[in-house]
Amino acid sequence: MHEQIRKSDTMQVVGQLAAGIAHEIRNPMTALKGFIQLLEGSVKEDYSLYFDIIKSELQRIESIITEFLVLAKPQAVKFEKKDVKQIVKDTMELLNAQAMLENVQFVPSFEADLPSIYCESNQLKQVFINIIKNAIEVMKNGGVITIQIKCVKQRYVVVSIKDEGEGISEDRVKKLGEPFYTTKEKGTGLGLMVSYKIIEEHKGSIQVESKLGKGTTFHVALPIPVLQE
Ligand code: ADP
Ligand code: MG
Image 1 (tube, rainbow, N blue to C red):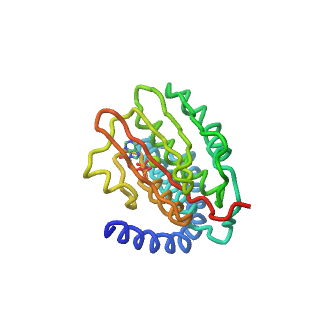
Image 2 (image 1 turned 120 degrees about the horizontal axis):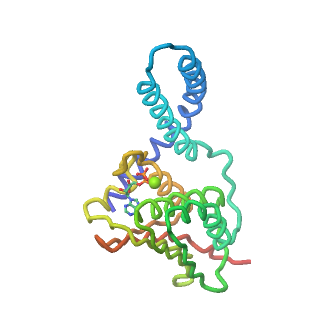
């Protein structure tokens, strides 16, 4: 519980900062990219190694800003009654090409007659994208990602995303959702932080179950509105 509270405070601060700064960084970034391109085309010596580093670092800044911007759009948030199954299906479609490239297969298992929930569908889609992307990325030899949706105790719709990756040790599970926590060379460590924040705004929760060498399951629980018209 203590851990949860501390994390959520951090996320709020990060969210507010993101809203103010992300847009301001984008404009100078565009100028930088333009002039780097110009320079690269006009210098005579071979500085391609330096240019590659500059470009890849600029790309990295851009990835971070893009993930921050998901947090920086509170005005656009519109909660509506939606079918989670459809949102999950849309996400799977979106990631299908990437999955196929990595020899990963999605196996859906959806309960019939799931109730709709109140949500901001674009943000929710972002959460499923982040979690499923991580699942694809962790399955370096391909395999199956099982995506299950069920209703629990008539109170929650739970989306469970199960991979066959390397798993996460117990002490590392605690770090999930911390800003900038990543074990990937090209990672931002922001995907889960953003996801936790969005699910928190939906009054839901994310639970992680993992076994080293076997795989990981992310359970995303979303509350069913008490009054179903
Ligand atoms: P990024 O993907 O940029 O590293 P994330 O916030 O999405 O940032 O994830 C943070 C870290 O959590 C990852 O670097 C990885 O170590 C760990 N992680 C997330 N999902 C999984 C998973 N399905 N299996 C194993 N590790 C995971
Ligand atoms: Mg990620």
